[in-house]
Image (cartoon, rainbow, N blue to C red; front, top):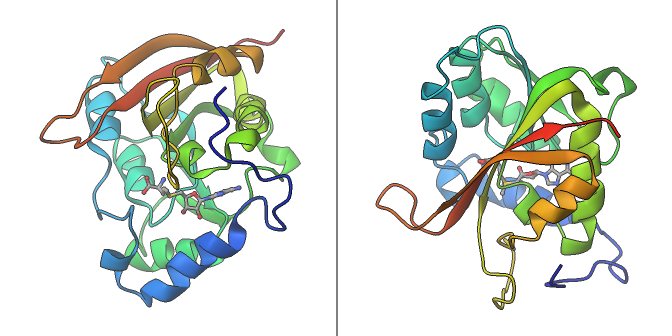
Length: 216
Ligand SMILES: C[S@@+](CC[C@H](N)C(=O)[O-])C[C@H]1O[C@@H](n2cnc3c(N)ncnc32)[C@H](O)[C@@H]1O
């Protein structure tokens, strides 16, 4: 994969301080959090709406949940949703926004998962978190997603897309097509990959993909 950035010599490879600063500096104003639209992502919402059998009762984990709008959308479709974020302030903010929510919001790190979550979910939802990670963390991040899934479980991936050799200046770092080759190496096999060009609803090129976990 194209090396858009390197974290090896960086003292904070997870960019924890960067994410914490975004939420701290917002001072409670969501307009100052670049990814917070206070609405579910349209590609998440329409995917849920398109599920003929629904997602009622599915055990769903939303990774890097931010202020919680996608988690709430999944829960409104009657999934049993856990949602976590690296930044405790984001989690406190989501809980404050949705005080009666059925979502189990937790602070946590994708790279240090609780043992009780391993192979515990039918669906892992990821929206814009992989593209916020240093490129060299992506193989491990995909392996972590795979480790969360029960047999036959799936990842719904929503991310900005780019051509393989397109120059990028992140963050974010839109994902190249080779992300799906890497996903296969980590046990996540594409059932569907949509390459969605910019529309009025989604202002830039995106991937929406469903990846199924197959134990090797
Ligand atoms: C670009 S934001 C997207 C937030 C949300 N998914 C959305 O679509 O609005 C990425 C989120 O991932 C979180 N994050 C970054 N690294 C993480 C990690 N290692 N574990 C869990 N969350 C992480 C950040 O704190 C941030 O809230």
